[in-house]
Image (tube, rainbow, N blue to C red):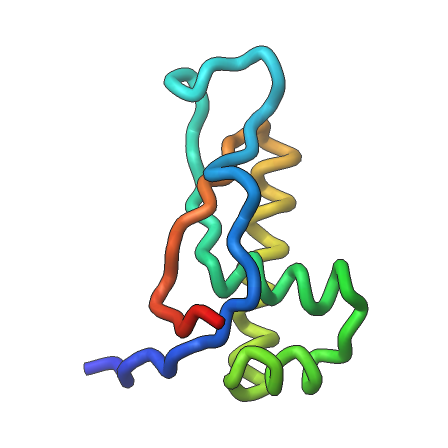
Length: 97
């Protein structure tokens, strides 16, 4: 049985529910879910330039957990860009600030 998820602090809500290639209807696209904690990790590390330890502290999780979340998020974003997929921004188990 897996360990229960530790609540993550999420500091922002996404501006949109999905991102997709222009000119292609959603019904014709494969979708990848991007969880709120994955978006928050990308925001803190890649957009704001925080070190992983500082970002992990901000989210209330360990540095290793942040690294795992960040790797998963970067893989999904790269896959969506290269393969022309839609990214659906989904809620996650987290504490809202």
